[in-house]
Length: 99
Image (tube, rainbow, N blue to C red):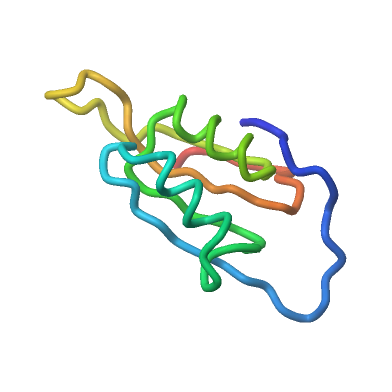
């Protein structure tokens, strides 16, 4: 878990959610750019990420100024690293658990 959101946005009646699969956590710089600059992706309230490792999630959340929670789901046999899902949020993450 990490906290990098600078302010909690005021709810304006719309809530933008983006989901993004970062294959094995690669091309993080490209993903950070796209999530921060591309019209349809930027300014999301919540971003769901798949196939992430802990270092990549931390870096992405820090660069984009989101709070985050990450849980590895599996140890990849080839890369010997944990990969899993992450939630990045401009809203505070008050409770979380891995099921």
